[in-house]
Amino acid sequence: MKTLFFILTIIVSISSSKAQILGFQLDNNAKKVEIPFEIYNNLIVIPVVINDRLPLKFVLDTGVRTSILTEKAYASLIGLSFTKEYTIGGLGEGRYIKAYISNNISLKLPGVSGRGHSLLVLDEDYLELRNYLGAEVSGVLGYELFSRFIVKIDYDRKQLTLYKPERFRARRSWLTIPMSVEDTKPYVYGKAMYYGGKEVDVKLLVDTGASHGLILYADSSEHVTIPEKHIQTSVGRGLAGRLEGRLGRLRAFQMGGACWEDIVTTFPESDPWMDSLMMSTIDRDGSIGGDLLSRFRVIFNFPLEEMYVKKGRTFRKDFTYNLSGITVKAIGSELNTYEVVEVRENSVAEEADIRVGDRIVSINGRNAADVSMDYVIGLLNSKPKQTLRLKLLRDEEEISKRIELRMEI
Image 1 (tube, rainbow, N blue to C red):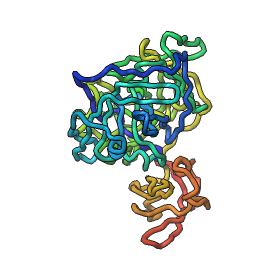
Image 2 (image 1 turned 60 degrees about the vertical axis):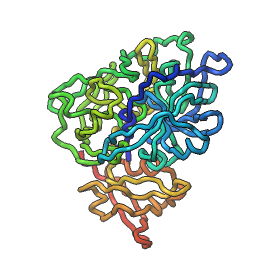
Image 3 (image 1 turned 30 degrees about the vertical axis):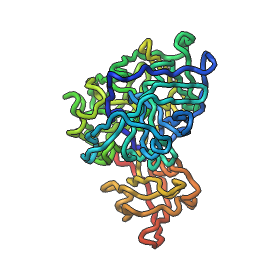
Image 4 (image 1 turned 120 degrees about the vertical axis):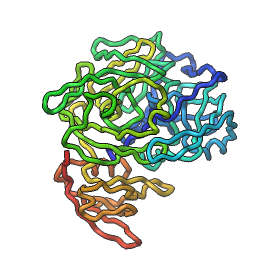
């Protein structure tokens, strides 16, 4: 599921004459606040309390303007009222979805309080964050935080630091990357280098709410093309379901003086719903997500339109992808039952006759109920020639499968 990412940057743009000024403040007039976070499949998850009553966990996402609650049941639990209903075209398998706006919401993080926020509430749990992350994640928080503070993300220490802008000073030891903030979202420029010598300058959304490394849109420019060697696969989920595309490799990708070689790149298929769902009409060639960003310590300075980065412990790790061809999601009240929801065509999993609906009983001798989703994802993204021993439950019958991971691109 390394290729799984959530297109949270294309949900919906909420604008209203009744919108209130966002009101995040550091408690007790502090100069800065440090907040521990969790990481699931390269996504940052932080604790959020709604209206001083409901403690939840939200993904921190530079790609969304309005905070999102993915499960309407929680809104009912604390009696939220809605001021407007939206019908939105979904990106993915093409159905419509419903969402609602609730105003005058208070949002609280450790050491941070905010009032007067708007909240987009989805009618159903279309994104299934909790199932595909294997954790109780119920929402998304974005621009409201980045617009108020200088935001430092330390992926190695799993720590978020919020600074008052007037109290922050950039250090010379950090690399400064120019960043433009357009329609509430951050963009940077990079260079995509293809095998064969072609080099393409690209404009990219910086998207902490996506688990992929690099996405390029093949139809954004005549120069952005899909590598000849690629695989067809599901590349993630949108509001309306599965997103299809291709995976290929670039010879290198360069951004702000940093460079990576042999980088796995996602090329989503064009979709007729795309234009109606973009949170803005800003032209871009793609995005960079958590698999790249997590290799740094990153600081976002929206007021000055700068991003500062410093290499982290995983800066040089190899880029990989789901070599098994198996996509799973966590089900059950404890989110520790793993069900196969997709088997990629021509993958080692398909060759081994692993099927959609199979449930993993054990993997490499470990009981599936005792391991996390990240552990399962890590094995599915292991190195080539790694052997996976799977016990599966199919139609109440336990079967054993053995697959050897294979690089296809």
